[in-house]
View 1 (cartoon, one colour):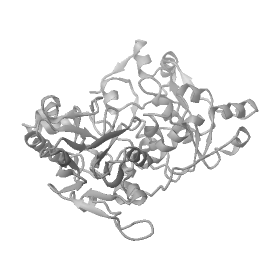
View 2 (cartoon, helix red, strand yellow):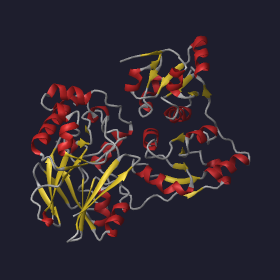
View 3 (cartoon, rainbow, N blue to C red):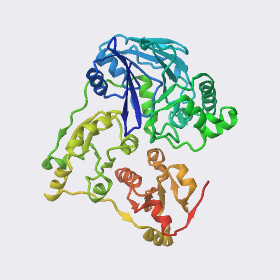
Length: 480
């Protein structure tokens, strides 16, 4: 049996390629949209991808299952459970007409790829339709499963959060019921899954699909039963429910959009966007009708950027900013090092920002400025200066940390709106007052500042963030 995890560090997302080396066939679980990576990896190992499967309808990235069905004719395996609201509705919408080769699975259904057997286990809670897959290598003579594709059900040290249908998709009053479903699924996992079974989750540390995911990519059922805080509470439903719902971070605002896109049909890419390079003499018109997303480091953005640019540095912060502040309809111009263009494009399409038209290198941006082009800067304020201004008229202080961080300790009188939720709370922020923006140390606040500047505000960034404020001995309050 061939087994390979393909990990996206920025989204903390894991896809899995599992293949039968005897027949040369392979399946991909939970692929992202830029499917060429999986196709190339399979080919390099003498395999061809014949199938693709999802554990559930994702919220944090756009699925590549439809893309694989179009690109290589992969058979699609999806859950048929969860009710009509959360059943994939795109299976009869093949590009050019017709339906996809799709198999809808119920609890306990099995299928094989070559000599590898997969058993679908309904594991609702994170989502109503969620499936996990027990994997048995029949080709080696095994008659018990080696591992379990757990998706967003069992993580290392955590379980998938059950509140996203309410907090991300906007379906009110369902998180407690979802938590109870998760409790049932967790109880069955504890009682039914053998200790030796390896746990292969869809996410690792840094994902917003849980609150305390471990940095170790994989585990075993026995280890998780013994040490996972949530699994250790399955004997008491009320304690389990209270624990699993407490302290969940606000989901990024773009989760709602992608949840519905994954259910209703992710647009087929065909190929990655190929943005053209804008030279220094072409930059002046770049920020007209286009959305400029500046992926450079924060210090470089603060020192000089095109007016109304969004700051969204490449890496783990890219999706939280670009995903929350940009729209799929935006015509995008990237400010990015030439060597990082492909990476930036891939990060865009994984969250549905496909309309990437042009890119500008930092060198050409510098040449544009040197030739008389105008760049904007971020205005900073120190904790000492903020303290003085509070005494003179109390500026509006905007805390863009998570609600859990704000509750633990905050600047007195500050208003909390996590940077990933800022667009939904923009009307709460006054335009006729000075707005001082802060986070923990000064990165998220610049992301938020760039968005506020684009919306016509005049924000000021608190240098060093809350940490600098508290270190200076200034007053803080607890809201816990």
